Length: 182
Image 1 (cartoon, rainbow, N blue to C red):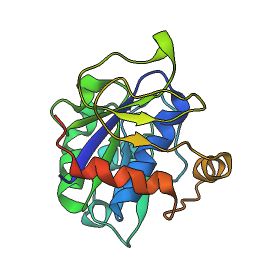
Image 2 (tube, rainbow, N blue to C red):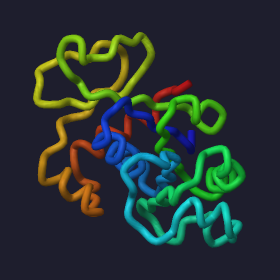
Image 3 (cartoon, rainbow, N blue to C red):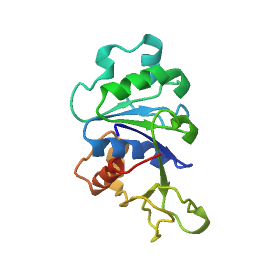
Image 4 (tube, helix red, strand yellow):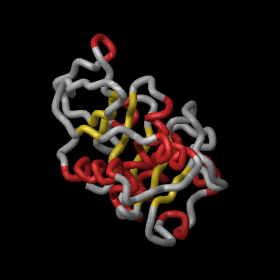
């Protein structure tokens, strides 16, 4: 599987870092932001630029190994469909951040990500999810990998654009690429 869509319910912080973690676990990957109302990723290039100007071949393939991020720039997923399809072909791995699970339905398999919270805050689902450990000692309510807690220094680095590939958190995301998502 070379493309996955990541969705988090009502957690802006997790919605910003989860796609980057999944991309880092793949090695060489592009994060495409399809959430026009979510936290904005840094960078000059945007998905809106590719949609309005038309992508060049150089925009569609990785220039070097590692993780690249394509911020949204104010475009909706439906408008960017053709560009996204070209990016899926050109990149070894593509991770899409989506605001609505329905957005991913015909673009890529959906990976829901939930923070592990106690009681009524915990999701009740029978479908596979990725669970992010928090400060609570809670068991996952359903099937799926459980990520270790994000350490504050590592999280601060992620939010400032520094990616530590040797972290346990990034390593735990590797399992996600191996699982069947629907």
